[in-house]
Image 1: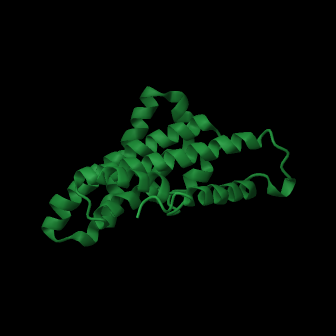
Image 2 (image 1 turned 90 degrees about the horizontal axis):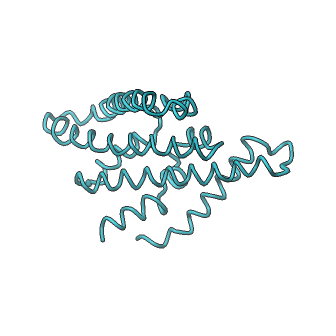
Length: 191
């Protein structure tokens, strides 16, 4: 039951993008097409889950044991950067079109504060490894869900008659705000 609460909370109630405002750059930058959003969501999910495992183990067995917890942020950033490079190499070999579609945003996963935020939150919430992985996966799924919903809406904007002053970023920000309000409707589910 505890894992279900973690999942519902991370995906809907405390969505990393719409409630915690982490990962806004890729949320707005890659959400033009659903295909790209799905690819970015998958890449971020892979990186977040892997980063959660690796950073938890590093924190528990190295940083805490040596009493150098103050090195957490820089250590986590380096781990995430290495993992993103690995994902980039794998994507380039497995799916060249997706690799090209993600373009500059793939290396930007390194600086995606959602990835770093989840790694730090797992430690701060005192989750064990399994709870941390569940939280990381659920957070990544929530990120992907928000990204795909936003991409679907933005694809529909191409067919809509939007006033000139609202085209592009303004309508995207308004839509993101309305989407965040919709997700706030889940607030009472988890206490």
